Image (cartoon, rainbow, N blue to C red; front, side, top):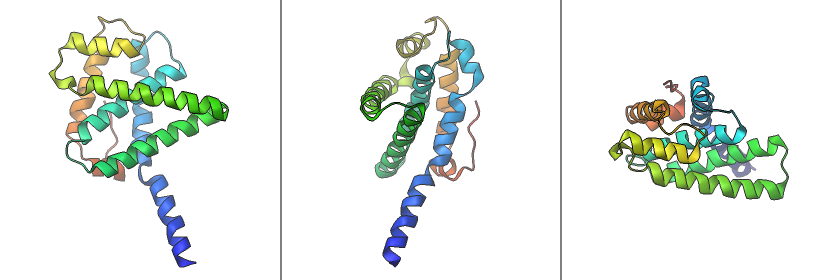
Length: 169
């Protein structure tokens, strides 16, 4: 009985351990200034921006952190995305299809930004324009993600997990 209760408590803890990271990513994605850059505000565009934020997050923190902890964060974030899609009202078959699309999109974004700091502004803008509806000459979003990347590199993963730091750009 005690082992069962410990397992339940441990599971609850794991379910909420990364909530601060997820909430920070959602808050950054809801930044209204980002939507001045884009022509429209759709669920798909917001999710793509969310995936960009998360990709930069993993890019920065993969260097000095344990892979199993980053895997737990990855699993938690995609579980939350799945729950959000369920809340919209999609059925199980559609959810599975959408999740596969979003995971593939995320990995595509992650591979493109892996060497972000070595790219010039034009190439950075081309990457963003591939995934988001914006003018390729518009450097505002490029500058935004440059700032975000620098902010993450000055922050510790532990402080984000504990919610000590709220990311603001």
